[in-house]
Image (cartoon, rainbow, N blue to C red; front, side):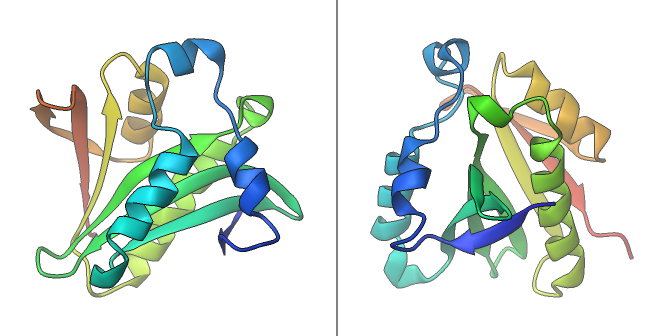
Length: 152
């Protein structure tokens, strides 16, 4: 259903045009994609932050930013969003399931982390339904941190 595609000249503008709902934007549930791309650029020399367009066929339906920490053996969904026009159609779940598949297949990681801003209960329920467990609450960023350990 979904594919993670490197951001390139063909999909860059589409990624920048993705928007969440007005309510999600006002609640500051996710940083704008341009910020996420800038963050990835900032950390490019470390080679551990990866921004992707989320595509369904030729349609860009969302965005994901993954952060790999091989030293800690952790893979993190740093940011994820589904465009307002595609929400409620299973894309969020498909994105997280795809990350879980990659995580399970990659021996470099033992823990998958995802966090979400307090109040974004839809994301919390989604992560919990897929097997993530609550960890600490990050006061500084007002985020719940959830973790999934690798199945042995």
